[in-house]
Image (cartoon, rainbow, N blue to C red; front, side, top):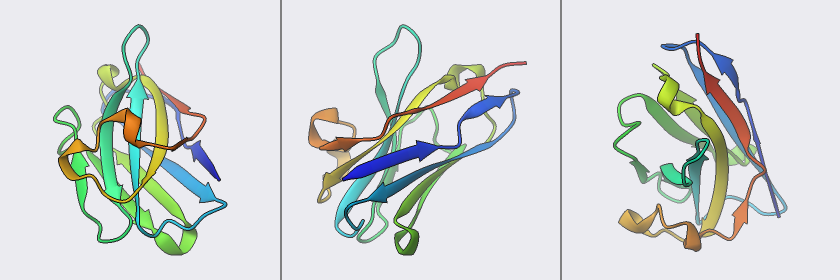
Length: 125
């Protein structure tokens, strides 16, 4: 089982990036896929989560309205479209997977069994 996160980079404030999380070794049905991020000197926090079964999703308050999570089960991939990026979004972004769906508890990192290696996002002028 592997998760491969990609798509990070350097972007100016107000810009956009799309992160991808490609899964291999298992199919995404009946899983929750979440994005977390860890900024320098801060704890890792949940950003967004999607159910690969029915598309239920959650966002943290800090990204709501700017980020969009989506899935392509045929490609075994989950995306995070990030618009209107702010310097505060600078962090290493990780995707993670948990079997099942945990609703409003989605941001509890203990639920997730597998983690990708992280992709770095830097928002700076």
